[in-house]
Image (tube, rainbow, N blue to C red; front, side, top):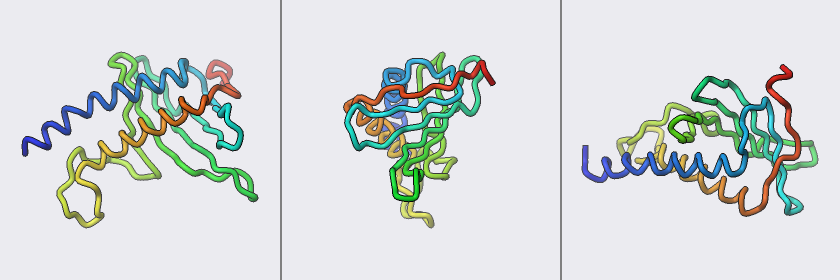
Amino acid sequence: MRKNNLAALANMMNVYENNYKQLIQLVPDVDVKRLILTSANDGLANVQIDVLERCKYTTFLKLTHFLGSNDGMIPHLTMKLRVYHDAKLAEVIDSQNQSQFKAVNDYPNKKMHHTYEKRQINLFFGDWLTHCIKNEYSLLHVEDLTNV
């Protein structure tokens, strides 16, 4: 493996750590079934976070950022996340119904994936979290997991 590949892989842990910090800043308690976040700025779309599975140290989340339309709400951005509470890491495991990202892809490749596709997706998630924090997204509605 080339030196650049090793450096990119080592940096992934920093990306996961930053994503976790921002996610917890946005949603301090993910022990609920469903969270709806809304922005303090008018006109920005709602975000729905569903807990798919909760284990002792890990939570699987589905995040959907909705875009308003005349037909109602349509999914705009969908990601599935694995949140490691003990290690304080958050990793995108599915984006727009694509999963099983390789840490490093050969390039060129048949599907034309970026060389560091997994890193790019997780960096995008971090940018998205930054957007939500800057636009003062906060809880609008919570469905408690204990009521299920």
